[in-house]
Every structure is written in structure tokens, then in C-alpha cells.
Image 1 (cartoon, rainbow, N blue to C red):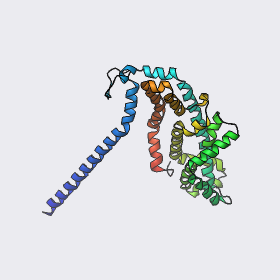
Image 2: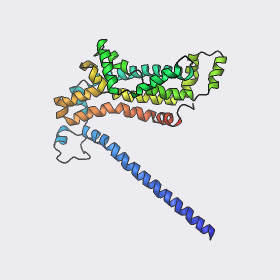
Image 3: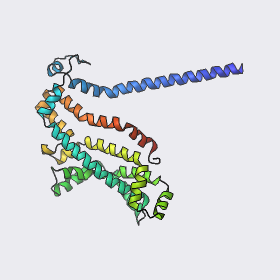
Image 4: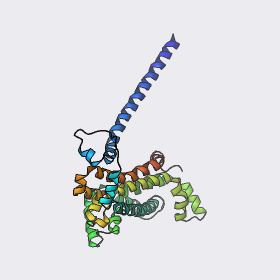
Length: 290
């Protein structure tokens, strides 16, 4: 009797777990459809012909005659390749300089001993409390005074530091046992060599995550480039798309406009698909394991 009751209880528990798991999967599937639908609609609109798109009184969720002419028109009607090149230069240069500053600053705050270190880090951390609008105003005045408007240097300089990334990497560096650092110093290893040979490999998942987040931030940057550049030769893809939308071309030919947006979105999607495991690894494991 007791065995049969115990068996029934186990069956009910397993049944509830299956129902709960099925409900979670259904909810996640519906949520994924909601999140992915705008991207699907963007791609769908980009492969519809101009006449087919404007001839739809009721939006169609598929097309039987896809075309790539919108992509060709997007590249020919506006200097889309120049926007791509500018964004690539801005993203690579900014990310590389940010990584150098972040790694060195995090190492200094986590491993080096100097007078006033805790006070300096507290003051540095308090910069996160300053509204971004105030920082933009200050940066704009500084870059203008230095006569760096409409230049890559003016675009890059305000973005080479990040208080949050330095704090995140510092916390990961501090999780590395002090015994490794002391043993390295006994062997005569310099601080820079210890950083390169020990700390960076151990914290590689976090560094990769920071790099990808910075690349996404640079690629999607809009307010600062829009504020500091009024010369089309220095437009980034975000500013270029806005310029396309504001022009007669973008308002008239929506499918070509969508094609340009798809082209600009693809690099970030590919980047995520390639490094998705690294991103998840960096988030889940932090910097405590190699």
C-alpha cells in the first residue's frame, strides 16, 4: 500500500514537472517569435519589389517573388560602403584602445599597491553616477576646443574608457589567487609579463565578452557621432541610415531602406553566432577558470 502511494506521488510529481517544462518551452517559443518578428519583417520587406510593396493594401507575411534589386539600389543610391568603412575603422580602433586601457587599469587596481588606491578607485567608480548627457556635453566642448570635430580622433577619444568594464575586469582579476602573483614575483617575473602570461589567459572569457559588447556599442553608436560630425565623409552606419531615412530616397523606397538596414545588421548577427559560446562562457564562469 505504501509503495503504491509512493509510486503515485512520484508519478504526479513527474507529471507536474513535464507540464511545467512544456509551459516554459511554449512561453519561450512565443517570446522568441515576438522578438524575432521585427527582424523577419525587415528581411521580408527588403526582398519585396518596390511595386509589390506599395501595392499591398493588406501587409503580406510572405512573398512568392523575392528580389535582390533593393540591395543593389541601396549601395548605389547612397555611399553605404563608405559608412561601412568608417564604422569598421571606428569600431576596431575604439575597441583596441579601450581594451588596452581597461586591462591595464584593472590590473593596477587589482594587483598593484600604491598610496590612495582605494580612494582613487572609489572616486573613479563614482563617475558611473554622472548622467551620460553631462558627459556628452563636456566631451563635445573639449573635442570642439581641440578642433577635432569631423575627424576619427574626435569620434574615438571619448569612447576609449569605460568605468563599468574596468570594474568588471578588476573583480575578475581579484578572483585569481594571490599565491600565483607572489610565486611569479619570486621567479623574477615582471608585472607586465604576469599580466600577459597569467591573468589575461585566465580571464579570457570575460575579456572576450567585454570586447564583443564594446563592438556592439560602437557599431550601434548614434548620438555622439551625430553630434560631433556633420561631414558625410565621417558618417557611421547609424548616422548614414538616419540620413537615408530623412532623404527622399529613404521615405520613398522603403524596401531599399530595409535592405540597407539588413546589410548593416548582418555583421553583428554573424559576430554573435560565431562567439555565442564565448559570450555565455564569460557570463556564466566569469574569470575564475581558464
